[in-house]
Length: 81
Image (cartoon, rainbow, N blue to C red; front, side):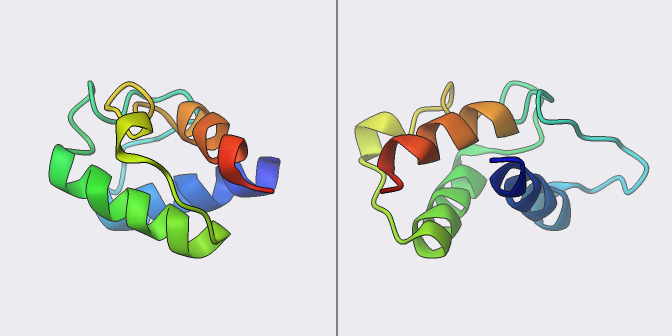
């Protein structure tokens, strides 16, 4: 599943990281760290749904579930067949 982690990390870096020198890891706090806001979380959810052909229920798409790449991958794996 490293590939999925890399896809999510790359998307977050390209879409949301303003400081090119800032380093993100799989455990970097995205929402609580201020990198991803609630609007960005929605676009990230849509990206994941389109990329992996899944549907993530809104009640599962919590800020806690989207707070790191590792947590996002755990969530996506629940819905990938």
